[in-house]
Image (tube, rainbow, N blue to C red; front, side):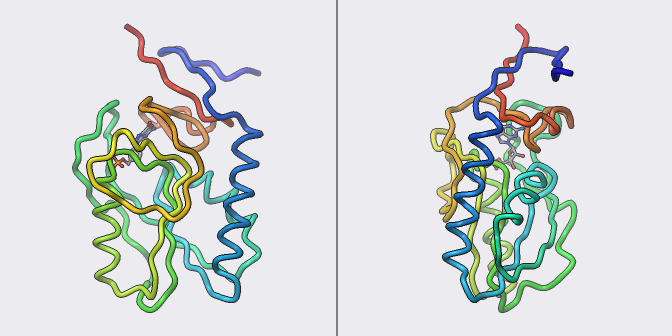
Length: 180
Ligand code: 5GP
C-alpha cells in the first residue's frame, strides 16, 4: 500500500537504498574511529530514533545508549530558536566517549546548545553524528564529525523526521511541499 499525504505533496529526496548505503558507510567510519573504545551514543528524540536503530546495527563495537528529548518546531515549518530539554539523560556522561546522534542539523541552534550543555558534564570526548545537514541554514557554527547527507533548504520528512508528528514512518527522506 503506498504512503499517502492528504495535506500536501511529498517528493522523495533520498530513497531507502541510498539511506541504507550511507548509514552502513557511517557505521564503518565510526567503527574504525572508535575501535577498542566504549562508545556512549545519545539519541535525540524523536527524529533520530530510526537512524539510530539502523546505525547501531553497523557498529560492531562496545556501545551503550541513552536518549534525550528537546523541544524544537512545535508543529510549525519554521524554527523558533528555542531549545528546551524535555527529557534528560538517564546516566552520567562524565569521563565517557560520547556521540550525539541527531536527525538533522539545520540552523545549528539545537546542537550548539546541546553540545555546550553536555560539555559541562565532563565527557571524555563529545562528537556529533547527524544524518542530514542543511549548511545554507546555519546560524550557529557546529562541527559534526559524521554527516550522512548535505541537503538543500527544504523541509523534509520521513525516516524518523516528522511534520506535526506525522510521516516518521516513511521509509525514504521526502520533501514536503506545503499546499498553497
Ligand atoms: P536546528 O536547531 O539545527 O535549527 O534544528 C534542529 C531540529 O529542527 C531538528 O532536530 C529537527 O527536529 C528540526 N528540523 C530542522 N529541519 C527540519 C526539516 O527539514 N524537517 C523536519 N521534520 N525537522 C526539521
